[in-house]
Length: 363
Ligand SMILES: Nc1ncnc2c1ncn2[C@@H]1O[C@H](COP(=O)(O)OP(=O)(O)OP(=O)(O)O)[C@@H](O)[C@H]1O
Ligand SMILES: [Mg+2]
Image (cartoon, rainbow, N blue to C red):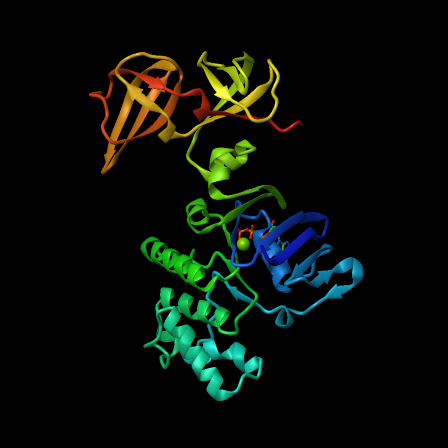
């Protein structure tokens, strides 16, 4: 895999607050990497430093094997020499220019001649679905069209990489979903290397080859959407990436290789899988995904008696809420359900490999 971007020890302070703290990340050629994290965790600041729009206090950034920034070496390559395209949340389209002029601008700056410029702008406008809009004033465009113009402008000079900072968050839900699908297929077709910042986990999971989860300026976990979903290493990631049931529990004892018996304060006990060592008596979090639970009318191994408190049919699946001792649990059932109704008793089956132990951070 060809490395496009390598960041090490990236740190940024504003006054006495460290807002980006020792961040490392790698992006391979053609990869779509999403930086995901709550508001204020340092996503935009990280992206701005990679683009050259902000200067780090420490660390290094390499793009295409060339060092573009390293405060310790007093090295800072300005943004226009980093060959990076950017798409922002606010479209940053010039209102006094036409669609064509907006998209042609980066080529003008790079002194690409008239004929070549026309050809490349026409080509990229076609790719983002704006082939017919070339001569319209930018102000006459809808939000979705403006964001397509911004994307075309970021792509037109064949950048090494494109950075996206929440580009879809100003658009309504339907449009956001459509542009997300379009962006992903465009990225696949063109093999565009991308770093995409968002605080929206649905967007992250749908777009990303790999997700970098940030919290308070630090990277807390990196992995494919599936890895983060299946093996979160912290409660924070589990909560951020999914709508899982998370139980606060104590390890009671071992239950075969890779498994422990855990008990919650309200008395619920179950067998759960662990991938990192835990000790009896240790407090842990246990993650159970709604779609990994099964509701049965009869008891069986690893079954717990529950009461159904809610049923919502959603086309091909049913969302069930139930009460297991003192706790509400969410279950999603695909396909047919046993004949259960609200208020009835049932059995909740959780296979041990579907309950995953997350150790607590050492304070
Ligand atoms: N120029 C600045 N001066 C002082 N503090 C700043 C500056 N820019 C950002 N910050 C602070 O740095 C922290 C990280 O900001 P940043 O914009 O990187 O967060 P973010 O993860 O992009 O958040 P959001 O999801 O809300 O866009 C915040 O606490 C913010 O207030
Ligand atoms: Mg931001």
